[in-house]
Length: 300
Length: 230
Image (cartoon, rainbow over all chains, first blue to last red; front, side):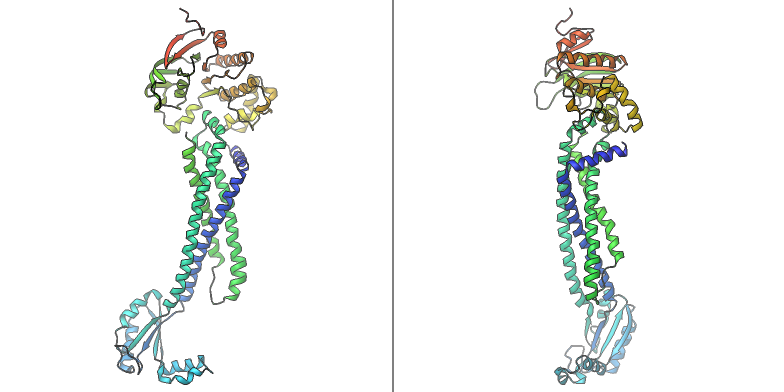
């Protein structure tokens, strides 16, 4: 089977089956754009997690004179505080500990709410003292809270990660949604490929029967059909890739990043690693669907 | 070359066997007419030779190969050892005479150079060298069958199967096709031709295998269609 002969056959096949080919290209492009969007979203979530988890802390609030927690018996004593500090020091996952006294907290509060009427209602000892703990890995929150939650002098333990996780859950939901639509579109694409190949095989049953009778191998009979599907898939994947790259360039870099400076966005590197996956999914799915169909419609 | 040993073929949706205990031996280089009415089993016999069907019982051997036991992946190579022509020519309407014949070489991977060398010679043999760049629709029926013959013979098969090759042609055109088949036969190619064209069979005076209801009822050297020769 010579290359020029095969490519000529493929070109002829695509031209003769033009409308189906266009439908196939569009379908592949749309489904892969969604696959790409889902992958991009997942990379985005990972990036934000990495960035923000680095900055979050665990706050251990100590008892004040109005605390009602069962571990409190009035304002935390120096002894209790030292005990807590030494427990923190003994934990592997604790990277560093910063103590904020009640007075420090009040100073910060005053700064934050300068000029606000709320200041008048807050007395210096109303804000609890706290330990700000930085963990080596935010996942290790449970270890810290487990070690401290029933220790005398600790009123409550707050994990900033929980606040972020709610936000990430929304993004994850979006990501699953995009993935679900992508899968549905891929399924439609598979059906479309099957139908396109079936129509093409029927239109060319004369050629294929002649090919068989002169002793062409099954592969050389099927190859042009599979290559046609693959060429359409490559076109579709290229469109999807263009869409993904365009949204990085014109949406993320030009519009979102300058306005939302507190969010780290996916880098070009991450976007570019998605591209080969798109081609792999697009061409792989199509070729597989075409091969399965041909097995049924072009019997050797 | 070809051997049928007690071959029967029973199709699923039929109560009569298409072939019923066929014993037949054809030597290399023979020219054999397979005659009989429609439904007598001629086509089934050809289909078994091509491995388009498997026998229900018995063995079909072609060139030493047990056809039924041939694995599917070896069928293409097996088909290359034979050429086939049909009543309806089976040419590709969008391709020229040259390309139609070349198709038979292209699909089995012959080089462009080989194709360029071989096609003019084979078109000359079938008398179509002047019409190499015509489309099938621009040719007469006889010419189209010559193209089909050229394609069947282009890879120089040892065996040529012809299923009613003159069925769509008028008598004088048929004579031309038969002359061509005779020429191909003289190169040593075995020819098995299914037909019910009385005039041609009588004129050629070749071996006749006559079938009826799936059985061979006559096998005669240099036979005539209507005469049993007894």
